[in-house]
Image (cartoon, rainbow, N blue to C red; front, top):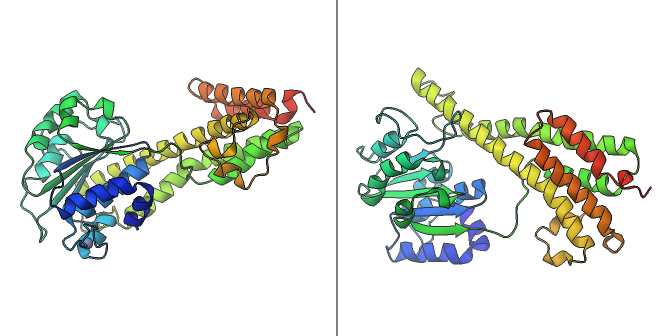
Length: 356
Ligand SMILES: [Zn+2]
């Protein structure tokens, strides 16, 4: 359950929100700042539950069992409205009028419609709110200042500095930052295995080439994995493209949103993939410099992989780290990613450090 998870992860924040609900003092708008998009999304849904569960526990916790709680978690609550960047421009546009879907004007108009739920409570979540340009932020400001009654707004972002001070000051801030990264993309564990092999067991060209193939395979699978995950999520929604009752234009709109969601998921996974590569070599280097395992950000990646820490050579680990950093930089330039990855693997492998 989301509540259990976040109570462990961010106890003070969750407690403060529960108390606010209990005292009927929740703000009408929250700005959620976190570095993990999935976490921002999950926390937004928990926050929505805290705000509108009709039968909260005496301590302010959402019940987690009622129809409203269930609908929020499955994103099927009829008055849960979300806005996120479109797939093409990666921007949240102002829009010409409220009939233009996935624009600020369209989003705002939803909160003025007659309520269809018993409680009449509306939830609005803007994901990647920093993708609203100044014009769009200004357009949204009025709704944020004077939201229609029974409206609860959440702006989620990884870059709050991109938001206007006027927007930020009208929201209550929640900070979900951690000093570490969760590598939860498909193939993360296999990637660390391959990097371990690359750095410590590839003493010849064939082995290094073998590792390169593994790394490339994991990277290549990221898009299909993202596609499958979002497809599965979308199937659970009432408004899925398969729904026969929808009009052609509605279907098109949903397809467009799904496409944007797949691309966002892919970008997220790829960012974590690249970060994982860097993190591996950076942390091995830290260990070689004598920093204790307990003080590095992700000690768990070394738990199952037996590294002989005492015999790490600072010079070699630095060379591998440099190869990784060069690789990440080259990705910005090089169009042939597979070739870049292969070069990097050969550079980072043990045999190239000249100690075979
Ligand atoms: Zn509930």
